Amino acid sequence: MGEPMSHRKIMEALSGLLLGMFVAILSSTITSNALPRIIADLGGGQSAYTWVVTATLLAMTCTTPIWGKLSDLFSKKLLVQLSLVIYVTGSMLAGLAQSAGMLIACRVVQGIGVGGLTALAQVIMAAMIPPRERGRYSGYLGVTYALATVAGPLIGGVIVDTPGLGWRGCFYVGVPFAVAALVILQKTLDLPVVKRADVKIDYAGATLISGGVALLLVWVTLAGDKYAWMSWQTAVLTGGAALLLALAVLVEGRAAEPVIPMWLFRDRTIVLAVLGSLAVGLVMLGSTTFLSQYFQIARGKSPTVSGLMTMPLILGLAITSTLVGRAITATGRWKRYLVAGAVALTVGLVLMGTTRFDTNLIVLSAFMFLVGVGVGALQQNLILAVQNAVPARELGAASSTVAFFRSLGGAVGVSVLGAVMAHRVKDYLAEGGLGGGRDGSGGIPDARHLPPGVREVVEGAYGHAIGDIFLVAAPFGLMALLCVLLIKEKPLQTAKQVVAAAPRPAEAAADAPVAR
Image 1 (tube, rainbow, N blue to C red):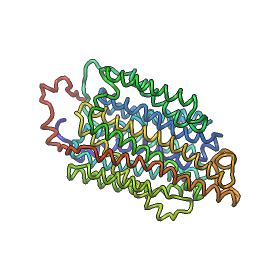
Image 2: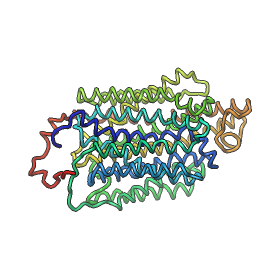
Image 3: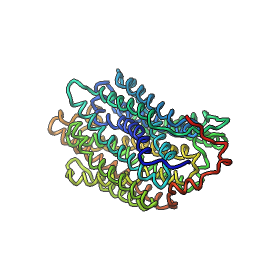
Image 4: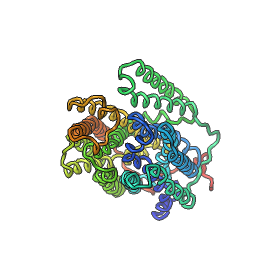
């Protein structure tokens, strides 16, 4: 790393990157309150509802480590622009979808682009900013995450609730932001390209990893719905996933340029950060995905109001991301904040487990705020801990590996907790005298149009089920706490320390940067 960049230059370079991240997160959240209407219009069922969410997460999860590895080999600027183009293409096609199947396919394209934006945001920040100052700017990423997360459901709800707009507008609203991000990145992002000879892309490893993860997520999504958890389908899918992933480990161990370098998992900090990130991803995406169903079905709120009701969680995330990032920059210490965040997350999840259809909304807001505080302290700073433990040339692979497992946790969380919620709702409906599935017809009910007696049973079922899935998620908050307690803290380096530790010109000749 050469001379450190000034704050002004960093913020100019980050402006387009943060806008791209805003677009990526917006695409994941804007449909949350619109999905019941979307699936109804396209004639899909509960499995389609789950797959519209899972398809994006699946594509993002499978491609995140590939994008990260490519960033170690090629121009980071070109790659982030390419990911934006892929995202825009997927969004435009999704807005034209005529069936649930077509929408799911378009969401896969979106997910490939989002995977690039997710991986490259951390990689580019690490390339520009020394570790000690990185916490400060990670806070900006946290705020961007929070703003997009709260804006998505609100914008999606307003679009769906406004006559003449329709749910298709949800897929178009991010396109102008993506185009603006492309233009800003072209003007402001100026990173050296590392010229390396004999570059090889590990296509075999990428294919095996993607195939193994895909089979795993297909199994988790469909088990308990299309077939029993203990069935021949389960045996085939899990056996196939285990075989592909085992082969991936062998291939990655021998590849010249592995997608996920196996040596990373010999480092205690990286292993613990990976496990912690997987737990945080499962908790954040898995448990909160179903809050919109809770507010719309158990509480009878509109899509717009449902988005507003989740604001305490987002505020907790935004405030903590900013304050913790600044505190880490000021002190160079990070472990104490991760421990405090993991404690807040675990306690918040346990308290959310008491949720019912008639829980006091002020009390519920306090519980959600506590969960947001935990996620805000953990999600960006676990990657920061890994970046501080690896050499500069492996930042892309290391950062994207953590992001990969966080995305994997989210995808598995949505599938597993969705299955748990479906079964609990069915059980509670049966206890209330309703059979035949979720509302007696096998679809997702609109509580506002149900007869009074049926409505109370449905509201109670969904209210109790949402509490159950937070209780199921709580042990993963504890898992994150144990991981951060066991991580050995290494103080973050300042800009002067990074420059002093950089290789001398003769040593760096093989990896000399070339000007754009």
